[in-house]
Image (cartoon, rainbow, N blue to C red; front, top):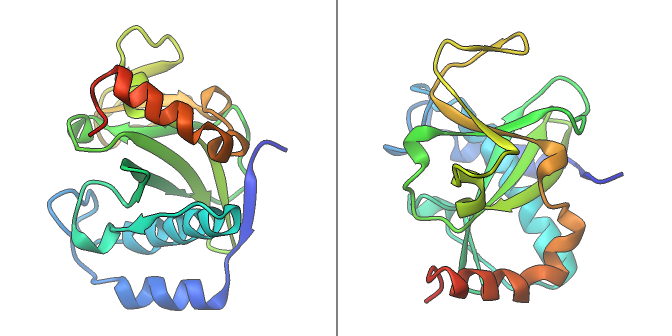
Length: 187
């Protein structure tokens, strides 16, 4: 299976609930009530656990109100987590709202959670995701009906099967840094 499944531990949920404010976390928060905070935190914890298990050094910066959640080897990573009611399928999509296109991040890691499990689905370089020549991603508008789902925001979407599998992340760190240097996005 290409997805990494993490069982949500009780302490993860307790931590996410302590962080939950009941309002927007910052100007980047989409939902007025901040309902996505718990879901987002669960995805961040699962990714943090993944990094720890792989022995990858990281800085967790999500609480600093930055437009990304982690820094790994100077790579700014934004974890995007979606609440779901079923196991993920490779034909499901991941999205980022268009309003976040210019946020300072280098890489997106996508996750889904049903609050019992978190699936780390894969990742993509931000510039590849937003590249207009990327035939694997598509733009959708607020109100569009996309496969029975009405879009709430202008966004860009990509199918899970077009993401780089998480199993490549630890071995690809050097190539990620080389790639960022090539595009002048690395300090």
